[in-house]
Image 1 (cartoon, rainbow, N blue to C red):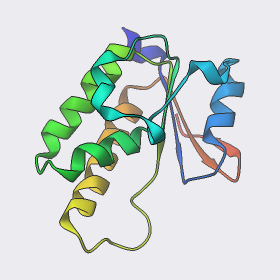
Image 2 (cartoon, rainbow, N blue to C red; image 1 turned 45 degrees about the vertical axis):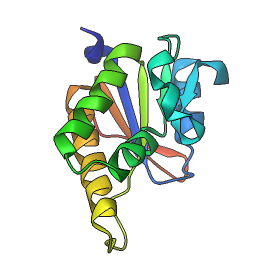
Image 3 (cartoon, rainbow, N blue to C red; image 1 turned 60 degrees about the vertical axis):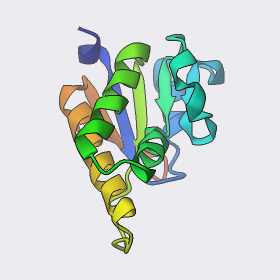
Image 4 (cartoon, rainbow, N blue to C red; image 1 turned 180 degrees about the horizontal axis):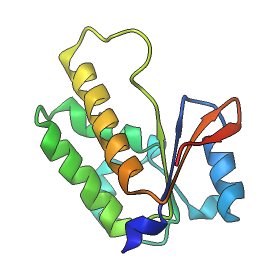
Length: 138
């Protein structure tokens, strides 16, 4: 099963998650699918050549804008991950801080939390980065 080899890396923005992932697996930038600047209209054209998915929360943000069904958001994210089968998933923590006023922002935070929890549960290893210091959680 693919998921028993997968590693999840989380933490706040700009904490060094991608650099840690590259070093951890001996990967290069060409192995990284960065969803922060991705054209989501072409999501179905993605190949499975990527070893690392970065900024998964940005895909969740995109899906949360026009969708009130969190279970559908989770299903779409899982379909993307199952198709690519990355060795490392990088997702930023978004639940700390000021509680948003907009319902769509709350939905986004809830969906990111549920997706993070799901992949942390099935991952072989889970790391949280703070100031480029990795804390192994699992």
